[in-house]
Image 1 (spheres, rainbow, N blue to C red):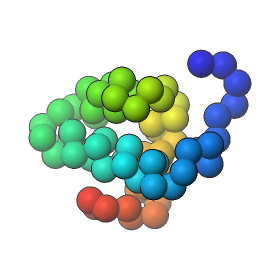
Image 2: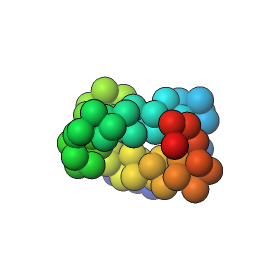
Image 3: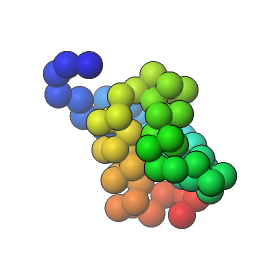
Image 4: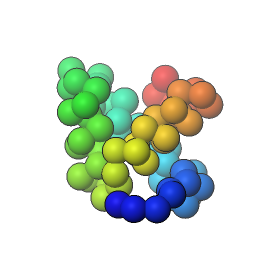
Amino acid sequence: MSGQWCNKDLPEARRREIFRMLVGGQDLQMGVAESRLMVCEWFGVNEHQVRQIEEEGLDREWPPL
């Protein structure tokens, strides 16, 4: 995917859903890379987007933290 993507391109509720699935996969003993790949495929986003959402979720302490 080309161009600059901003996490604000997705509604916060959607970003929180992505974050919840990312953390949930890791809670189910998936590795970080595997969890990211699952989220990319499920939501149709790229790894850069997932990493931005992951960082935002950690910074804001979104559930399920």
